[in-house]
Image (tube, rainbow, N blue to C red; front, side):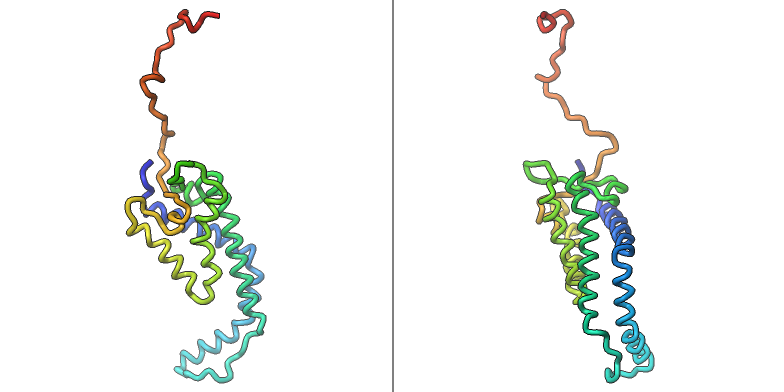
Length: 198
């Protein structure tokens, strides 16, 4: 199987991001609304001062101390939704919705061709767990480095999460691959021969 084109991998990931975002709107909507209620006044005042070039920070509205816990809850729910969407589908079929649409899939590079739940989990951990570090900006940088690696990696164009799980992303052939037969498998059966005797 040929390696998946980088463009197809990018489009597949964007489709998956859109799906996970939609699921998060449902699962995380109330938490995000509550968070914006808390930090909205601070952001509005900080924005107003920036427009008038006022560098002072005195008198800025202070969010409730529980706002930090609310942000952590949002990140945990986001990671859980992504985990539930991606890990089982990769473990079962090697494909998320995005990968199905783009006709690419994840396969194992090891002698064992199965994509087990454990291998799928290891693959997701490297890319998904940095979500918990988004609040400080580090998580996004780690994910960006991970996703940029296929541009430079040879020979398999693996991202860090592929290296962690020993997987590679390949194209799904338009027609099913039929294994070639060895000469011993192609022996002709002669009707009425010795094989037909009771």
